[in-house]
Image 1 (spheres, one colour):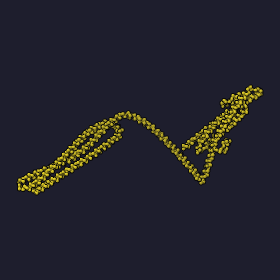
Image 2 (cartoon, one colour):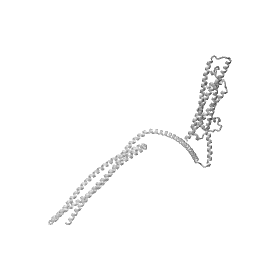
Image 3 (cartoon, helix red, strand yellow):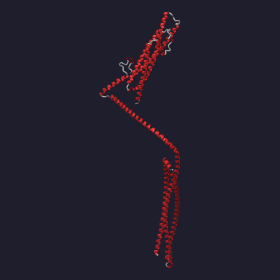
Image 4 (cartoon, rainbow, N blue to C red):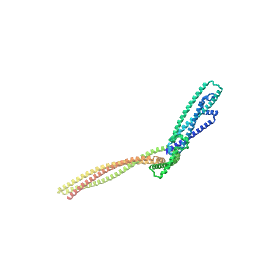
Amino acid sequence: MCAAKSSFKRIVKSKKLKTYASAVCSDKDARLDQEYKRAQRGRSAEQLTTLKSDCQVDDLPKGFENDEILFPYDVSKRLSQQVEVLLEENCQLRRSLVEAEARLKGVVSKCPPGMANHGRASDLAASKIVELSKRVRELTADLEVARMRCRAAELSSLTSAQVVEEKASNDVKPPDSTSTVKELTDKLSTANLKVCEYRNQCQQLKHELKIAQKVIQSEVGEGVNVTSLVTSGGSGGWRGRAQQIQTLQQRLAELSEKTSSCEVNEKEARKTESVARLAEKEREREKEVAELKQQLEDKQRKLEASRARSRVLENNQSELRGRLATLLEKTTHDDQLIAALTTQLASASDKSQDRSTANRLEQQNRLLENQLSEEKSKLTNLQSVLRDKDKELAELEEKLINLQNATTSDSTERPRSTSIPSTEQIHTNTTLETLGVTAEAERVRLLELLAVNNKRLEQERQSAIQAQDALRKERHKAARLETKLARQELEQLSAVSCYHNNSHHKSDENQSEELKCRLELLQEELMYLRSRLVNVEQEKYEDLRTYTSMLEHTRLVFMDSVRSMSTALSTT
């Protein structure tokens, strides 16, 4: 599409240039023809003088104005003939150029759109033709000047001939004929030089005309003669390239109509397919052009909407700038409030840490109290067991004393049978002594264990008291901090509400990190307390096992002693 548009623009531009050049050439040619006809009609001296002044004939020798100076008639006649020949050639060239330009215009106007690729060659040819036409006009102007000079020379020669005839009739010879002859010879030589120059210019013009004819032939066709076209005047049987293209197109249409009835050959089918493809491509391009136009309209609408939106946004921006100015004025006070609130939040975070430590200490104190209560219950049970054992030992001692008394009384009443009871009594005494020794040893051991448990209980009591003191202090601190925090919250509720919206996310992040750290610390403490609780349980379990083993051993010993005593009593 872009290439077609550019070629179309080049063709239109070349057409405009050619029309402008042809119009300028026709105007200048008409002007020159009018001047030539005017010069041929009037041969008076006044017209010649005006033409001399118009053509700026300054390089003519002064002898032309002097009637007394003689000029050869044959030379002037020959020059006038050459000038007439050149004028005729120039007129023919002008006519041929005008006709060629007209034909070129017709060819370009009748040129189909498929010939748009030849626009550059036609532009070059048009520019070359314009340059040649300018050169021809310059040379025609020079020829007109030479013609005027020749006419002035003819007039001067006629006047000089009349003067010579008059002088010959009077038989009067000029005094300085040699000087006049020299001047005339000089003028003749100068005239010959100018004639040579004009001849060279004419040759150059002919050469350029040949080049123009070649260019025209390249445009019109190689087998066409330009001179025959000029002589025929365009009315004969010659046809230009555009006409030939039209005739060929007509013949092609006729042949296509004729061949439509016949079977289509492969080449013609390919041609029709290519034509159909080209038509489809043209339709697609037309559709694309329509779509692009629609898109362009949509884009323009969107652009207008975006412009309106930008205006609205600019208005909103101006309003927001005003609001921003008012907010910036309030920032100083807000910064002060924020600084105060940050300090308060730091203190509040410290207070919250103190609260967390207080809660942790409370939990530890509760655990210690529970452990202490369990230890107290175990200790009371052991004390009750010891009391029972003491009671049993006291009963056994009483029984032992009673038995000793009974043995002494029996020994006094029955002195005869002292041998056998004494041995039994000795056996019972030994058993009772062993029982007493074992009971005393068990009592000593139990006292030692009781002392150890009392030490442990005292240590636990001291630690519980310390924990309770620390808990009491922390509770007191927490209560004071809560009162201060409530007072500050009531005083700075509005400031906190403003600051809370801005620093909510940051405070949440900091609190989350602090809570994570605290959670890790609490987990470590929990693991430590669990391990400690397991160790304490193991120690208590070992103590209970030792207590039970000791009690079982003492019970067995006591039962054995009781059985032996009962057997001894039964035997007695």
